[in-house]
Every structure is written in structure tokens, then in C-alpha cells.
Image (cartoon, rainbow, N blue to C red):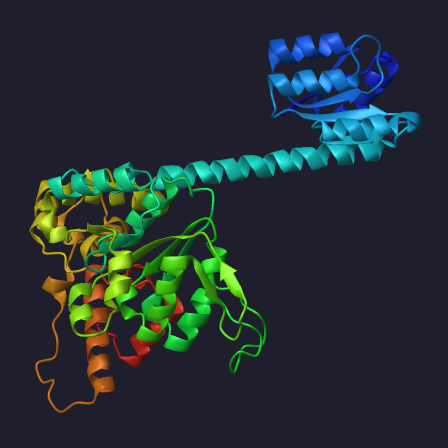
Length: 452
């Protein structure tokens, strides 16, 4: 419980405030001079709010405010004033007081002021906590691995984070490109400003231009209101352009201008917009090949490719599989409220021997599934069926429509998952990350009854 210090040379007034605060569950101390208040704050330093009278002999409320703020700027100070000294209260606000209240005041008036300040303190504390968690989540230590290749990644991130260089991150799907981008951002001077991700592969050409640069109302069919765009949202921060290789040439030209001049126009507008944004781009494609084929602008490639980070696929850093597996085990045991203490040697050998076509993302999914299915305290080989082992496609694929083939594959996946889950339908639905109702609908659709 946060404490409040009441400062008033009128003892009766101070005690009245204390009783009022006590009736609402607040703990407070009362002193009758500015000198006592300053000494108490200096000695104890445990107060969230100082509620001080403005006019007092020797050391007045203004001086208390100044001294308290020098000792601990995080303490909020509220001044109490009479009608004739409101001007002094305004001066106190300019010097850093959080609020003032005019005597005589109603009981509710004081409580409203105190609760408002405590609410703001809680919100500021939450912001600080979230900022700390972001810094912790994206520190270099959360890019897991001890292999020589991943240690080189740590070194590059450490060297480039506090620069303004554009970054190009290359690697297969699931290797952690976004995690690297976030690590760079949250270890840079821009960390208190937005990190904005744009999936360039997910949007059509017209929508991508609007998404990046914004548009004016009426710029095209469906533009019913102004949109500011991701570059303006990311101002002073970092924009992460995922799958940059999918950007069409028309949008590449506009992106090049942003890289060169930090300016652009929104779709349908002639107004010049300037931004201060760091660009981190990522791709799983070979951009040099795209350049040679005329699919990607050479000048844009050179602008993006100031610092290039290659992320190795998991099959090239198998020494890191045990560390990654242990990390994901810890996360998903807690998330799923399971007491799974470790991975058996046999299960670990199975993980290390696998080629991981889906890279780290696939490994995390496998470990989460294993945690859910594990019936003991250790993950065993039976808990980690890998899709390369389990998937059996129908042998007679020729001449069948795509929807029929997809139905056959879906049925096989459901059968495999039911077998893995020991015929437990709820577990199977959770493994497939669909609702129980959807899972039952698929059972009826495919007439799967033999395991029920």
C-alpha cells in the first residue's frame, strides 16, 4: 500500500485529512512543518504523494515542493491553498506540483485528486514494466544459441543496433528474421518509438502502397477516409518490411525515394511528407537473382543492403537444437500449466537428427505439441511424432480435382493427429489449433468414427 504524507501547520486540519484518507483505505503520516516533511522524506523516502499546505511559517509549501522534487522526482506533490493564494498554487504547478486543492474542500474532492494521481502512477508503472519486458524479451540473450554462426549474429546486432544503417535480413522461413529485427530496434536509440511490421507478401500492389504511404479520402474506390500509412506511424522508430522481395516495381520506386530523401506523398495527395524512420527489410528470396531478372531495382537493393545479416537454417546449427528445445519447453510448460521437467536423451536425439524444413518455428510447434501430449514429467520419442515420419499421401493422385486431393490430405492429417493424441479429440483439436466444434465438424465431414 502506497503511503501519503500530509503537511499542515494546522494539526487539526492534518488529522482531519488523515482520518479522511484512512476511511478510504489509505495509509498516511502527518507532520506540522515543512522542515519535518523534508526530513521525513529524506529519511524514509517511502511516500507516493505529499499533500502539503501552501502557506506555512519558515518553510512553505513551495519550498517543500522544490526540496522533495530534488530528492525524489517520482513523488507527486499536491498543494492545499486558500482562495486568496490560488496564484501561488498555479506557480506550484509550474514548478512540478501534480495538482492543487482549494480550502475548504469537500471530502470527495480530496479523494478524487488522490485517486487520480495514484491511477496515473499505476499506469506509468505499467508502461515502465512493459518497456522493461520488451527490452528483456528482445535482448540478444533471447536469440537462443551457442553455435559459431549464431554468435556471429550476436556480434553483428551489437555492432549495428545503435547506428542508423539500413539492415537487410535474409534467411529461410521460420529462422527468426523478425526476432532479429526487433532485437536491433529494442537495443537502439529508437527503442521508445514504434516498431511497425509490414508483411509485403500479404497485400496486393494497390493496397500495399496505401498501407505503406497512406492515402487521402477518395484517392481510389473504397478510400472512404484518410489513412496515414505505416511510415508515418513508425516516425522516429523502425519499420520492418517483411518479404521485401515481393514488393512490385511501382512501389519499389516510391520506397527508394523514402530511403534517399526521407519523404513521400500519400496516395492521391501532392503534399510532401517527411519522416525519420529506420528501415529493416527481410526476405527468404535471393535478391541478387531478382535484380538480374529485373524483378527488383538494383539501386533499391544497394540502398537496403548497407548491412546484411544471413540467418542460418536450423539444420546448419543443430548444436543449438537442445538449447532451443529447452527454451520452448520452459515457455510452453508454463503456458499450458504442465509439469514437464525435461526431454529424454532418446527424444533429444530424435530432435537433433531431424532436418527441420520449417526451422525454429517448426521446432517450437513440435515442442508445444509434445508438452501437451506428454503424460509424464519427461518428453519421450513417442511425444514428438514429426510430420515427415507420419504423413502418408494417397498413392493415386493423378486425375483427381484439387478439392478432392485436399480433402484426402486433411483426412490423413486428422487420422494421424488422433493417433498421436491417443484418440483424445480435445487434445487432437488443440494440437491442430482449431476449436473443438470445428474438429467435430471435420470428423463428421470425413466420416471418421473408428477411433471414437
